[in-house]
Image (cartoon, rainbow over all chains, first blue to last red; front, side, top):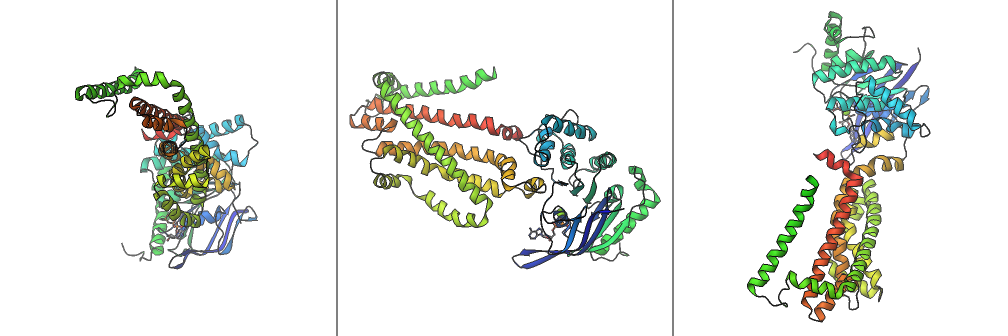
Length: 262
Length: 254
Ligand SMILES: Nc1ncnc2c1ncn2[C@@H]1O[C@H](COP(=O)(O)OP(=O)(O)OP(=O)(O)O)[C@@H](O)[C@H]1O
Ligand SMILES: [Mg+2]
């Protein structure tokens, strides 16, 4: 199968007052079309930087990012993004928030079609009936659902998510994992999900990439051998426990701690 | 019921204010040249109503014209400062310095620069005194826009102008209107300042001046009240605009 996302030997450093700060140092990630790549790593190691490079918001100092056979040098319309903060626009209704990317990507699309597409997605994530509400009238979890709809409303090839569920409580988060899983079955995107939750990475990922501490390189890649239609219960099976154990050890190594120590 | 209360309460407050004023004048037996009483005012309005209409109109249009210039210039300046760190560093001290100058000192400067251009001078003063809050608030609003807000459109390849129009501008509107409420009052003060100190001025300020020269004290007080009314009208016009264009911010706060 062809890789839709190909990250090869990417290096990047930020210019800071005290000289250059190397953040990424030899990053290699490949994501086949339609697959879900979860990325975990220690705090501050460069995960958000990675999302900005994949989105074409920044150019790497060295190495290359390829999307669908094209080298990424600038932003492209085939990308959708979601962040930890849902960043909904308060002066728009939920429906008009979801429609926003279509105004950029498909300016000639009739309003009727835009509305139909947005309503279809809102229905899928359980937000039917909230189309006319303002973002501040929704709960945190509902806002994040709307934000996900906005990220995929224009049918992007690539969905990039930077800790989208990070600010939610545990129950809401698990609800959203399942929403994400159901969306995947209906929408044909390839995804990169940054997370600090190992269970989340195992539940949603087809592969989990562990980054080392800053400057980050690809430290470990784990293929998740769970069926596509996963349930939360599967996270409590021995095979999942083994995978989570491996990931936990890898994170300790990335943090520079001894995996054998408690 | 709600609406009735909203209208009745301020009107009652104003009536109470007039009663207290009248009572103070009566009890203390102040003559007109110390303090005119509300009961003197209708006569003044009746006698000079034409001058009041002309003066109000002149004061009003010049204030609005100056404020309009301030909005255009303040927005442009705010955009420049909001989007460029260098411009922010360069312009900020200049602006603060300019704002610190007491504006009364500008009246003779303007009068000498543009001799006899009374309308122009007045509009200029209203503009000069009122653009600062707009420029600063728009500049700060734009420069503190969270990067994620920009990124949701930038990641789709949207142009800077599109991002400004769809995100940065509407997001800054509440700050803009907050500043506009300050600016409209300042512009009004600026207009009156020029009207009052210019020898052959126009507008309500000039009417005040003529009341002073002719020792017509009720007229002077009548002008003050007219100014207050005009100021209230201008202020609430801005509030109405704010409700229309940035009402969502109010809803969010509650
Ligand atoms: N614009 C910038 N200028 C300078 N340094 C930056 C910039 N953005 C990020 N950094 C630094 O680069 C490093 C990596 O940042 P990044 O946001 O990519 O980390 P992260 O893995 O997403 O962290 P977290 O887990 O806390 O979200 C951090 O040390 C951060 O301080
Ligand atoms: Mg981050």
